[in-house]
Image 1 (cartoon, rainbow, N blue to C red):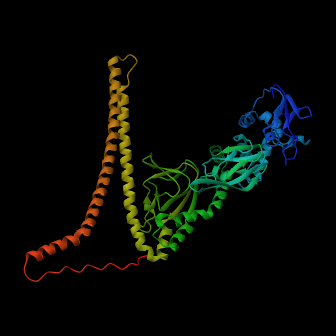
Image 2: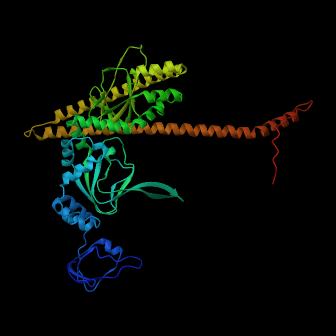
Image 3: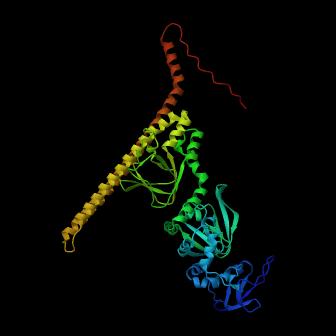
Length: 502
């Protein structure tokens, strides 16, 4: 409050009186210049102006950003905002922020066996985030690449479900738990084990969190091989039961019976790859099918990017098929992990063992082999065509760029020539796009016309069938009138079934 006086009324009926949330009063309920009234007071009491007042309204978002940027002021101001936290009143020496975060991390199983140097690097690269009550720290169903460490405040774990009631979407929020000081959440998404947030975290009070990004953590893991191995082991334990389901229910093996698919899923090998690690290398000799269970990877042909793949994609299947029991195949493509990836490997030996154990699946295996060989050849042809077109377009652009580059001393004719070449190239590209659009429109029009003609012919045949008995009767009557001899009788029509009339 900058100027004027205001009075705070007694609490509403049914609400207990509280003196917190107001600073600078004179004891009789009036507040003058310099007084601070927090927003929570307006939920419990009414504030009325006694005279003309000039006040400054500070939005909670501004407070949160200020607390994030000015760390030295955070510890002094935050206890006033978070009424349940009075940590400064203790006379004992408070541990430093780094010590508090390190203690919190060591209480989590994923950081329990890490070295002090590793934790120091994680803390150094963390970012302080402040959330006001009601703010969503993370939202269910969204992508993410960071984890949070709750250092001050409390938050609620909320599950959201959207249904339709009377044609209108209805969102139901269910509180499934609470997080207090020291909680860590979002670590599985940060490591790439989960692709989306499985629940929403909503701040219950003013929350101060420590946010750590995936890129920073993965870089730290590269410098600490022991912690990296421990992380991989924990991730593998978390995803152990989910890996087999990918193979058991994958469309690639849908024609095989349940026992065969379960055998492959249970005995498949699991491997994890960090970003920028090579999963499969073009030209390398191998005997395994690679199936991407989690993560994102890129496919390369001749060191050029051709496609991005996600969970469920498979590659290297030609190496799994029998070309002789001991003969190994060369992989036609290179696959590089973009994020942390879990890959399932089905070796040729295991595939052959499954066929020996379930001999009735050999015909299906031969059909699958033929189908996948054709599909692989088509994929390689399309990739080769794509690279060829990309190379030609690059040559055209480089030729145009090289031919139109001029020096500063070039005359106006050369500048005009460059503009003409650029306009020609732009016109050629636009014509190519227009031609492709016209071809696509013609194909769609042809398909629509074919469907209309077929529908008209069907209706015409149905109409002829309806009038055929009458037409045959007219012809029979005309024949009997014109000819002598015994009359010809009409063929008996099938009697329609009797139906009860109500």
